Length: 164
Image 1 (spheres, helix red, strand yellow):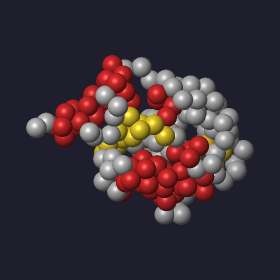
Image 2 (tube, rainbow, N blue to C red):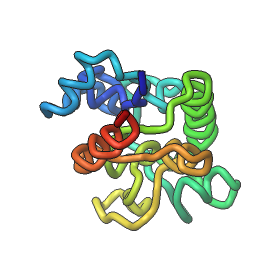
Image 3 (tube, rainbow, N blue to C red):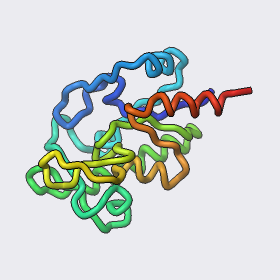
Image 4 (tube, rainbow, N blue to C red):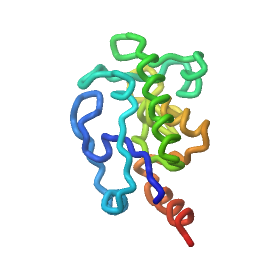
């Protein structure tokens, strides 16, 4: 059975920076849960970041740049938390590889999980094109990464992959 890596916050685990649950309600996600496809993980907590924690954004690039040492993830108090984000991303990749996962549904706009856009590092709510650290490392290793707004596209890929 094809497993899908899912941001833990999307399935109701209180792993967000503020400790609040961010349960994403959708019939497709409910079906995936019933089918036993979900592997839920939070790269930020996997990287040792606590709950609650200060909100964080990427400064000087995107997740790919953080992985290359060319950008940083900083919290609102300008504390560099890049190591936790990088460690968590590597753990997420290790889980994906160990379970042969080729699809992920991650939280949009997150400095870890955003796959098409992230916040720009100014803490003003401004978004830029780019991926978070965990999304970037997964994509670099061939994992198809979707966000919750793209769940229908993810389900369509799943249907193609499971078609006899």
